[in-house]
Image 1 (cartoon, rainbow, N blue to C red):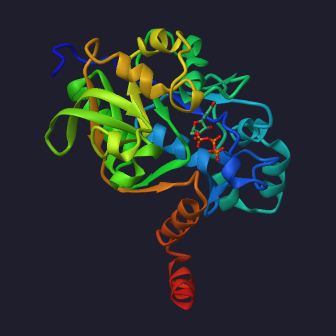
Image 2: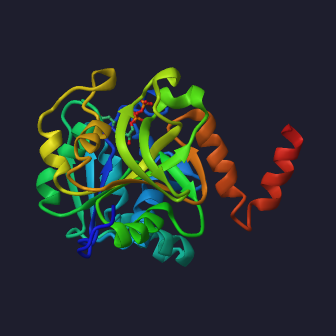
Length: 294
Ligand code: UTP
């Protein structure tokens, strides 16, 4: 279904970062999972850069206790800047300066209890207001020349509505994802007639899975406000999007690029290798180490 009106632009993005990151304990005991680095840049900075590249102007973090390092990362560290400047470390100073975000662009709210991704998104409702919003999960990482969210915004400008990033997964893995019930599929765009969170393989309506990028219309907050519990007893974003089918068009978008699940140890290590191989100063060393261990 195509929308006739020009879709409202996407200016804001929510970064739900209130999870406990239990799969990375003890590393995540005192630092947020989103501060773990891909090579030398924390996951959250990759996510913010991706959003910037997609034209996002306002960045909304849904945090929790123990996540102040995330706020500090995008603040000014005068002492560090002064030291780098005094030592003539211009290159490093430039890298640090890139992380200093204007205060009228960054917004923080807290999810007091980790009741699920849907609940985390709902916590940002007042900051978002009555406009469409992107949701970016920082531990779902995509490597491509055109970042995943920019690809989605381009599609959104044509079709509007709700768009979820999707990928085809092996059927035995459907219980890890939100899964699409498909009414039509042109390869790139998948029209959705239903969504199921974490179905068992034999109950899954397809093997097309939601990956951590969303563009959502503000009505999603009305659906989330019912606080209905879904799979795993959590308030699921997938359920709120499913409830919007018929109200607004809902499409899956098969993005281009290699994806990494950085919420998982093997995925995170693989992503580090893949990102290091993109770096001219590291590529040879990493290749030879990889050979040594293969
Ligand atoms: P995950 O399922 O990866 O959970 O959440 P987690 O707590 O981060 O990590 P593990 O599974 O314990 O290792 C997916 C995303 O949703 C956010 C997380 O921060 C992550 O970005 N989330 C999840 C919240 O913000 N609040 C929640 O209640 C649940």
